[in-house]
Image 1: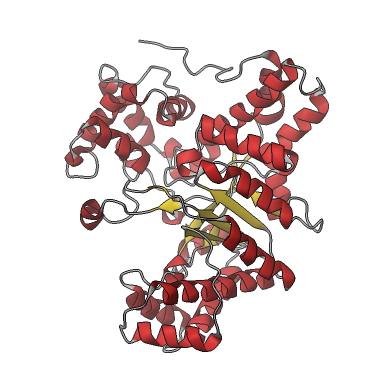
Image 2: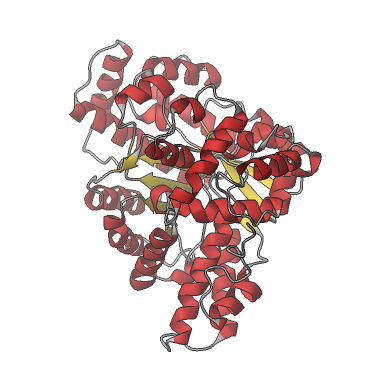
Length: 466
């Protein structure tokens, strides 16, 4: 059946919201300053074989929904055919109503493929054939997918041991969309993780340093920061349960690292001290290089040990954690600020109970030196849906200045995820339009429209100096 479900004024509930979106937000270029896209696919301008390859493979949001419905793992991450995986996803879609997947699915079908038919078991065959025929053509290569959404800048995320070969290729290419990278050294911090020593060996190899001591480790990390910086990197990112900030001495940390390198078993206290030391060293170094630093806080990862053994990390077994955040985060930022070494910082929160904590925390360290220097990042992961984004916007508005907000990012592995920017922009415009209608904001379209344009694009462009 044909549908007008995704129409021009989707999610826009009055004329003010419509005017804000269509006149001030819709056509702004996209700055996607944090994602997990493959730079190799962009460098090689990859063309996907079918819609499953680009849309379902690697998408743990969809995988969780399919598992909940009772779909066998064979048709999720297993050896089922691409078409069978798509059919099982199509069967799942009607059951995702009120989950953001329902909105995202139909926005993506409409924006990339011009398909306005609702996806379900009845339409699955037609939509699979139509979308696959399009995606398997040069017009839908990775670079053209980025062009279709008016992307201006996208920033992928790489480990310190990455060679950055594909970013180097892109920097030398004539591709007009700028592709950057963010330095993510969590594997060098989380000393209790399995395989830590093997990882440190690889890090040393890349840095050209034999890592025997803690000082060697810091030298290797600094070497890789310098390498990333010379390849155009201006951002870092950390995905941590919480910020670590324990008291320690250098001699303690050296002894802890030596113990680990000799395959000793560390106590929780030793691990926290070590993680605190490395994190603080890194953030001081980021300030020296003038980078923007990102903290993604609050995920409880790899909850299902059995499935983690089978499928590995990032396959859909994570959830929201309830870690204490305020005191350690405050102490950590304060220690950096006290040394005048606090760089631009974006803090993303995964537990909605902590929204107001984060919204007020940023105000402690916005010192007037930079507009919006410390940011409360947009709704992330489980919170990048209508309710989550609205709560983040409301907390930021109530406790800070939403007008200085740098807006949305996808944090996605999918080249079809960019309509999430449109989704955010519609939610933002509807929120403001509703308050204009109710008389809580003035009908000053010139000023409020400027604020919408700034949040949609200009604030991020100024913040990151793109």
